[in-house]
Length: 286
Ligand SMILES: Cc1cc2nc3c(=O)[nH]c(=O)nc-3n(C[C@H](O)[C@H](O)[C@H](O)COP(=O)(O)OP(=O)(O)OC[C@H]3O[C@@H](n4cnc5c(N)ncnc54)[C@H](O)[C@@H]3O)c2cc1C
Image (cartoon, rainbow, N blue to C red):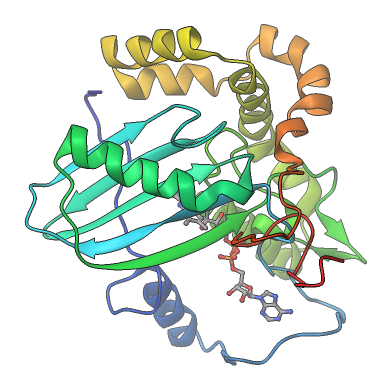
């Protein structure tokens, strides 16, 4: 892949110094916000913004972060043997790396897909891991109608704001957070604001996901060829434009795009899911 401008930015998550989360915490505290850790909110009251993150697992990401001597690079791989309906990636930057399989269905076999992903990148990209630490996470995708609950604005993944094709929600979380705050401070209409600025891209993502779900091996080859032959950023920008054709497909896509995400593969028998639609795991299998 190539392009005139950066295709993405690498950032670190978590509690380590230099991470996005640390930077946001520092900004909030500098602005006078009181932050309480390990203090779960159990009831809503007036003037609240609901920001509790994903409520269910439509997407699961499993992987490792590690130290490495291998050169910097970014690799992306598609295929049902690595990440069903999703993608696998390897990112290396200045001696630190992350490798993961993002699966959109078949959650029960996540350990198998992760092992296949590691082996694939070892063969094709020279992956070398030292001090590998495993991680897992989940996300949910939903195109909300209002993103209001009990009169309170709901932001980020709690509302389902996430790109339905790739499962990216960082920008959506920050953008909806800003719009929700403005609605409380300035009295603007939150639902109208996010619909105006974010709904077209979210809707295009839903159509993209609907189409990707139906893409077989040949279709994937075509897409990869297209991404590589042109400025990748421009190809993706076009893909996220809510064109006339996409508008036509949207009602059907909206109805059907989540079908493969309703994963029924987990029966709790010898299961090592990160989390799944059955909710918190109960070994009794209820
Ligand atoms: C492995 C992985 C890789 C990802 N990679 C990317 C990427 O490359 N690009 C991208 O854009 N997105 C990515 N995402 C998605 C992105 O992380 C999320 O979309 C984004 O973090 C959502 O932000 P949020 O604030 O809505 O929710 P979260 O980041 O989930 O934050 C919600 C917070 O609320 C807390 N909380 C929940 N309930 C309560 C309660 N009752 N009281 C108090 N606190 C509560 C939770 O503990 C959590 O800290 C990735 C996700 C995963 C799992």
